[in-house]
Length: 373
Image (cartoon, rainbow, N blue to C red):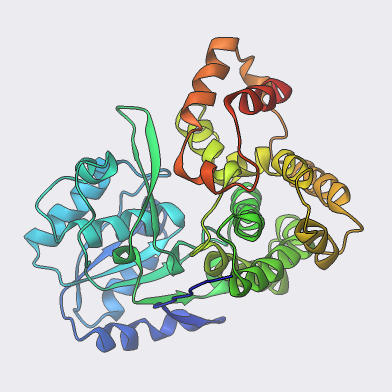
């Protein structure tokens, strides 16, 4: 078995680590930064605090990144980069903010709008501006990955892009930033973490280092997500979920995600289901599908390592975890027609689908969506 592992992102993890931002900016050797964040952090004062504490090195800010960021938001960031002659970026927020910032950092070195890269017309520039990523959810793991996900809402498209240019130079993971997350966000992002770990583990591109990271992350989520949802002030649970998030991000950075993530993109872009919830909607179903072809016992080992007697019990536990944390377990609210299901099937033919250990046919997808209907 041949395998390769690269992780160029410097990681700083721990409560209070946000205080080291100034030092990390100095290490870049750059002097004109753009802070990219969401409206929430523009309103709660944290964005202003980072601007003030930067000693003038953060000279501009974009505070309008939305969930499932649109290519036009990315273009707005690129425009600010050029207008302010920015030479580095700080991203503060959840996965949407980090993805938008990663794309803007890379695309700003080209002369084309974000849509030209999303639709595959152009290759991603080989290098991007230095990016310091500060995640505020536990979460997407975007702070340590070479993946960004963008949407073109006008065309109903949401898709991942892959390039080494998307790697941040530094990730500052401060679990204290997740303390005030609402239960719904904690549940959605936590389920995304679990899917990253499980899909990395069973991906056809799996490898030993990522396997170990994936098992560790999955175990943490199964033990701590419900507590983080029900007792948001429990900082031990918050810290363990932040640990799970970055560990799962490291786990899937090389093997990639698989079928559950492929299905999540149309579930989000077409039905509006939040990303982590959309991933979780099918993960236990694909676990049962993949278990049928588990001839080498890898999934059985995953179940045992996470505290369950077999794969079926692990799948049942994930379904129960979704229910207990308030996540969707079916699509009954949409009363989907056969033609709508066909649309979902076609739109699920995303790149991650082909990383799944069992080849997923249109008929299998159709059966799955009908079972959720």
